Length: 101
Image (cartoon, rainbow, N blue to C red):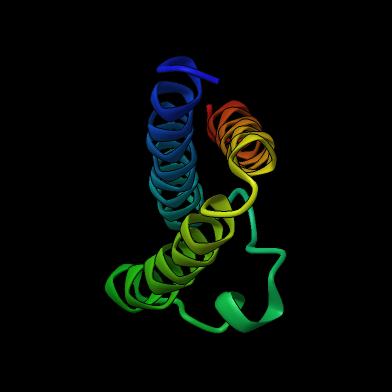
């Protein structure tokens, strides 16, 4: 496996957290503009941006801790999971920005 897998694993964690951050920022923005809604019913109840952030980001953190623990036995699958998470949340953020404009 060499140095490539550890580098890609680290990069995948950065990508996943960046995707969560893009989603957070774009969701707070489009909800403030009243042009979108949060599809997660548990998160949707938090109208205040600070409360929404305080609820959403720990979910992201716990998810990434799980992936980190999983990566110890399955680093390649952890890369796949993080890449999927990053791409999904980045895609949601792009959608949110489009409906906000």
